[in-house]
Length: 171
Image (tube, rainbow, N blue to C red; front, top):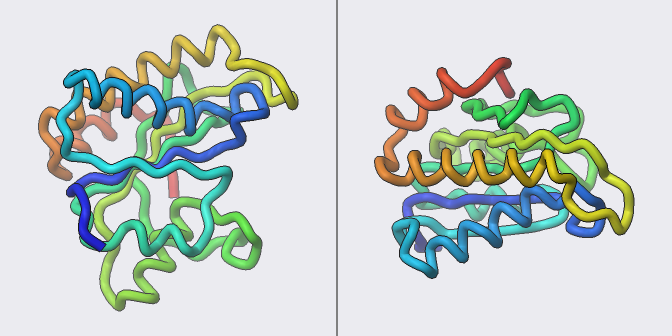
């Protein structure tokens, strides 16, 4: 697989209120890229949930960003570096970002590219609900962060932002 050096993977259910934050993030950054507001140095993917097959989407990448809604995330977002980890999700049909990285390591026999999780606070997840006003504001702040990250798409720059934009470590 060849592609851009950065892949942004947004996941969640667009029919469940703030669970749509991941896919909505992807839609909005694609629009920004099309308008020339973001460099064309990234690919995007969106899905309802992460699965082991997403490990293949990390091949030949320099940086990975997973984007999801979180019930307990600190506003306006949490941005944390991930480490490969086999967790309870490895035996279900949906897995965590850390488990995707662990699958990558197992199938490729090497460490995955540096990966980060951008968690946007969500407040309402009811079927058929729109994004909450609070989450829409947090979404805009998260897009601003991505603009900063893509100005210098290297792991040291991203780690610096991770250290200043997280309240807890994600694994």
